[in-house]
Length: 377
Ligand code: NI
Image 1 (spheres, rainbow, N blue to C red):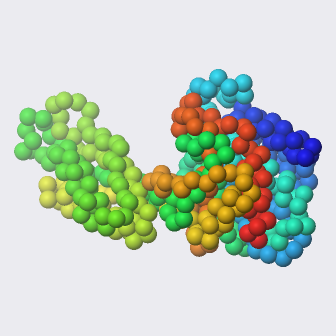
Image 2 (cartoon, protein in one colour):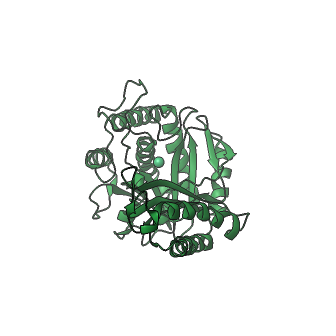
């Protein structure tokens, strides 16, 4: 008991440190060094692997079993903090506004607790402190190493400010969406604003493409499948009396179903290219694929729920699925995974300057994750 109080204090201290020292995607050098220091001090083994930032801790159980992974992301956001907490960011314009500081502290806690209980652990647990989640591609850095090669299943956690501390949000099936980005360049022929007949105006072409793209959701995708498209940037011309040569549309497509994702890309290209041709212009489409949808394995989700009920430290509520994304999905491709939302106290949402995590959740989260690993081995 005494020991656990000490650990809880240490984890809170670590959390405060990480919150005060936020680092952006791919720049998490100080964060990585601090995680390494805390784990090394506690005698936790760190896997040698070629990661510029981020690291992987490994706990080898004394019994045989599967290899489980836990993903904790570690980066912060370019946001100016407005919380007034005593451990606020010491770096103007940078903030842990997505709770990754909490993920780090919970991951370290889990590593330390599992190390103490090695004799009960069947198999191996790899705790992945992943860089650059906010770039949506940081998980690829982990996939460039051999860390995931022997992993049988993976767990992920995320802070959830829509739930009170002590509440877990868990669902089976799709949790987050596939996140794709597109850039459409419409090329016409520039001319005088008073003589549109001398050129090909790309602006009405862009407008027609924007309207037509919405029909992919309403006319092509199964009405029971979640999907959306948002055109978030539209750029053309720079003055009032010149018809520009090009117009650029940029935005994002979100889908859950794998087939829908393929269909959306195909239809988007067809609509953009053929609409442009119909107006005498040309469209070039760049499709930048992000992470796929996160899918929670039924068995793992059930285990999470059962464990929360038997251990009694968390109440479980059904989690809503979201068309937001998480690059965790890259890591669970081909293996079962489960992504758990951990209530961190109701308040401002993630990516907001007033977002904060209730530090009281750190120790119960670490204990819960430890039990999960011990139970699922
Ligand atoms: Ni996040």
